[in-house]
Length: 116
Image (tube, rainbow, N blue to C red; front, side, top):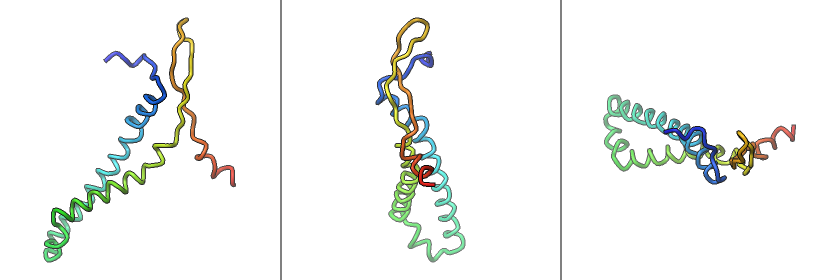
């Protein structure tokens, strides 16, 4: 695409880039792993406990389970949405002034170390 050499600016774009490349992929990876486990559990119930399958493996129950798993995956990765702070910067490269973003680790990540 040829845009790998351009800096990312404004700050909102930096946040969006961070979320799309570093936060959402692990979130959906976590969710897909748990969906696989849900499918395996559903198959186990159908094969080994057929009488429970009529009650536990209905479409509404599976949808409810999927939504719960999605909520747990979002909760699990929720701190990743706030672990960086982006600041606007200007820099000189090849004699030209460019605007971009610089990230800093959020201060709350260091609170535990200070207490020790």
